[in-house]
Amino acid sequence: MAGFSIAGSVYEGAVGDLIDELGQLPGVGPKSAQRIAFHLLSADPADVQRLAAVLLRVKESVRFCSICGNVTEAEQCRICRDPRRDAAVICVVEEPKDVVAIEKTHEFHGRYHVLGGAISPIEGVGPDDLRLRELMTRLADGAVTELIIATDPNLEGEATATYLARLIKPMGLRVTRLASGLPVGGDLEYADEVTLGRAFEGLRLLDA
Ligand SMILES: [Zn+2]
Image 1: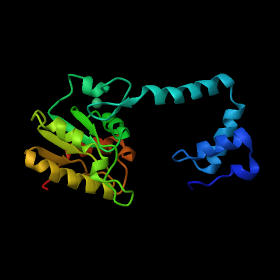
Image 2: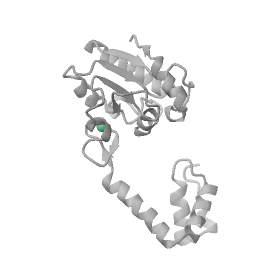
Image 3: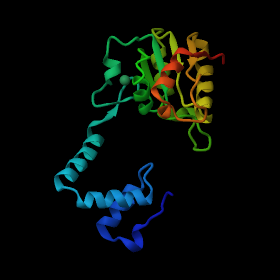
Image 4: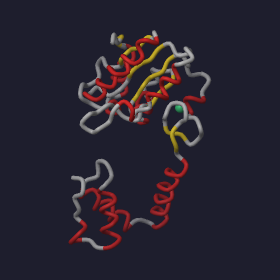
């Protein structure tokens, strides 16, 4: 539905612009964009101001952790700063939202590495577009002994896992894949906590 606009002939000016902008957001179709726009129009000005302020603040103050690539407001994220987290195990995920999904299970006590996507020839995403160099740097000193690859259980996620396993193999680490029980073709964030938690018990050794 990209580029589809219901503003043109029906709504003009600011309302039309707002509907257009909202319609660009993921998961927001033209009808939802219209509903949100009119909700905002009739909302308390103070509420709308708070929303506008938080939108600006998130762009100004939130950045990516210099170690793992997770979202953070400090130089390093909460997990990387936590000395109780096991520094010997790194769980590799595609996006920061996957960190949240795994944290909810309370099954993982190591650290993370956020790749910033997955290998996808169709979308023109190659290994160089992911935070792989940063990962190799983290593995260089030998403190990390295990890598759990928790990319999404779909085509791109599998391709990324295979690529990563081959890349890591010469370093002699234990490399496992978080997959068992997860719905194939899905998105990690949509797996429920129990299923995702169980997937940590059934880690599969990757033999690249
Ligand atoms: Zn971090």
